[in-house]
Length: 204
Image (cartoon, rainbow, N blue to C red; front, top):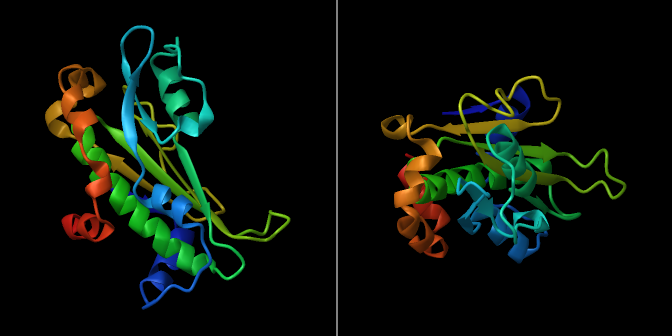
């Protein structure tokens, strides 16, 4: 279930009217933002957690001692990706990119980690608080352990925010522990073959 606050709804509504997006953006950053690599790591107890790309550069060479809510907090800190659209961009165009990213991340997570409850959160910064004034977007995810949602609602934020809460009812009791027997499937999933158009098609 995806929910957006009023600010994000307004931007996405405007973005849907666009036939083209004229922006200046680093293509490598955009590619990672739309179709990131994801894999599993394990803490010192053997409990798995999700890592996106390079986990924000955090050192995970040794198994972390974090568990439970602290492990979810670690995923929050490490699983953040960011993109800005340069001087030529507009916030409305960025909303279109966020909309595509949310659908793509949803498809990837559902395929790679079908037993896990995950929250995916995206937000847009209009650049007003940056010295260069460049708009940007951030997207991140974390696994839901128990009933712990770091962000429970998109409401209450000044900036545009949307949240996708993925729940696989068949595996609610097992959660991440179900992945112990499914790691080969998760690690072998060819996420780079995914096309954004396919992600959108599967969403409808």
